[in-house]
Image 1 (cartoon, rainbow, N blue to C red):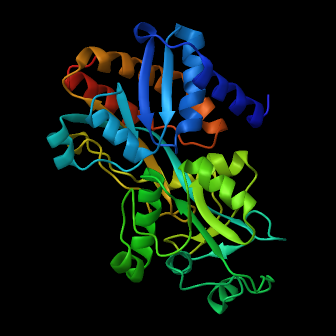
Image 2 (cartoon, rainbow, N blue to C red):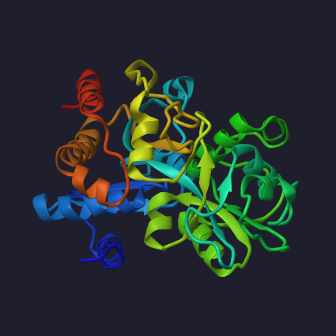
Length: 335
């Protein structure tokens, strides 16, 4: 079965099953991990009979829903800071690692053919680079013919952890971006049109000629989108790939005492992809019974879901991190 058919099957399972409170786990949040969570949910249901109803509504919505305790867990690609975890009475742990990639729709360009630096990417999203044949882009892509066409920027319209990862990266690379726009799940975009979710951005980029946007890599891969190469911290132009995301995560130092709060952007390493990130799960501390059911799902996924994650170009958590998270659950009364 190809990825398209897998996706359609998973979407059917996620949206059409009759859900009952007794045998269903309800979660909501980040669109970034939706493909892998859906795949895990499909396999978990077949193995246990327990359903996962996951609403792919964006990280901002996921945080709001778990804050209001209207779901069993929230999911966010922007890690919640330790002080906010304490204030919200939350537990937090990472579940999967992936990458955010710039994607373009420029006639004649193939995936990986266009190269950009973080500074040039920031200037495009600031609206300071307005055309594809701008000298700053041509200087990076000598020998590549680029059109004298206006660039249409596509960004997220909803509160998004994908945006938090992307805007954090731009803030690291560009002082202008950091001063004028900053970072977060929602920012005041200087230019462009907004799409809801990774799906919305992907659809806009596919439809609008001479556009550029950013999506989680599984969406780019599934939709056969034209992604760009980026210059990483080591000065090398790299393509997004499983190995590049894995390299970005290799040196990460996770601390359970901070709720595993950590960003993976602009990570060192010759082969590392510079816009990598983890997706996090949020639980309400005061609900041990509900949390036990959620944790059973992720415990099963940690044990049985790595091959599925890799097929969808996500990086499973390292064994030592999985072990640390299991200790974290026990320490907080979930076992």
